[in-house]
Image (tube, rainbow over all chains, first blue to last red; front, side, top):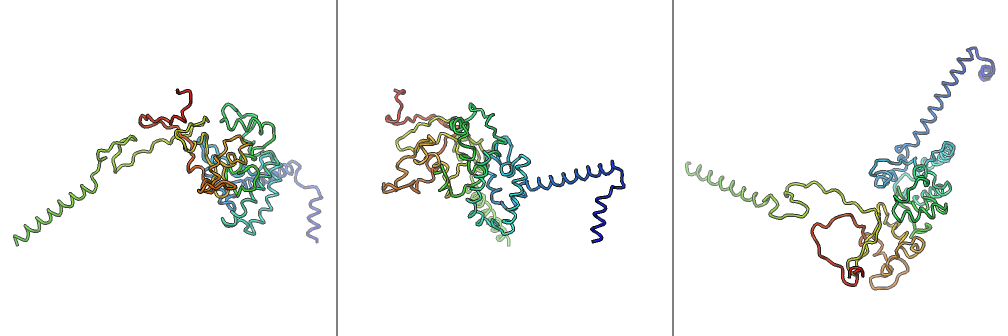
Length: 191
Length: 159
């Protein structure tokens, strides 16, 4: 109790150090805190971190165009699955803390368990993408800059109508572009 | 003693000759007089691979050459999944989706089993599209070919 009291007194009484020093220390402390926080958050955005649980998926992407292509530009997990905008990113990261429970319980700890749960995981991600108008696709594939004359006729047909009018969003058609698909029997507009 | 030496030397020479003859016949080397349109390469050597041919990006309908030919796929199909879980082709070309997608419907024969009985959905033996239907790569014929489609498939403009 006495310890607490003395600590509180220290907080409330003015510092003996000069104001400039205090401000400077606060500034440096803030800098270190922010750096550590941001580095920590970025560490949870790396492929190595994702593959800790989602290993089969990280393998699957390797034959798709988002991994291997002529110009060597590629997307990693977080480019598509974590919002880039800071506030949205924090919201998603807090939601993801729930997934730590799944990790502790080993919900997708084996390939078989993962395959069984694949449809559920995919449905969740499709819904998220639909709700935010496929924002993570549009971070790179911006509709305003699409040149229809450079696209194949099939693409032009869809993009200039359904996508342009906002009737459909990217993920409505582009499912499983970086992964294998779950059972699509009951998915709208499939088969 | 002397006989023995002569015998041994003769015997070993014979074995040596026989073995050289055998190796020469096992592996005659060269191309055996066979010339390939893809370039002459010695049997022992691996020729550098040709560059991969590209599927042409421009979509234009590819004409059938004979009656009953599975139509070619006039577009890219990279990463189109055809598996137990999903069939990307059918997501446009099935009868259910063709109207909305504007794609060509698959033939009614794909809804029949091998005894021509009509089924309620795509026949499992027709499910793996790329067993018969494939995209066309941009490859020139290796030799001149006089093949002509049958009269019934020839467009009118040819006459």
